Image (cartoon, rainbow, N blue to C red):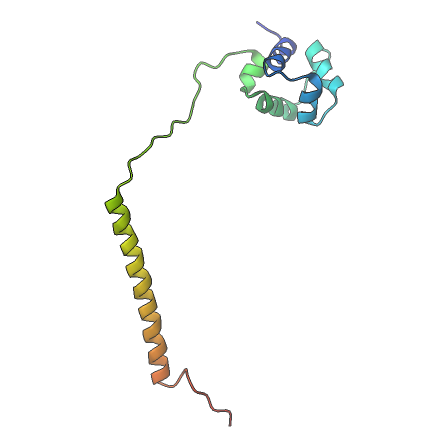
Length: 123
């Protein structure tokens, strides 16, 4: 089983990153990466999580050198577009908008009829 320091170096090299490039991604010094790879120090939890993200591996893979048994990938299924359904939905929306406008117009007319809206006198 690989040690953390060996695993870190192997994953960094596999991603074609120099110690300097990896350090820049973590906002730390190159010497810190060197210490981790030599086994002189270990990163804190925040840096471990950022390392795993940068190296595109799980924490188990990074820390324990365990290869994941199952990789979950997103699968996008292309659905056939039903044009008739889209047209039906379009007309439902248009009808609702027109009905709303009609109701607003009727309320406006009613308010004008009873004198709430419309001409005002400045006596």
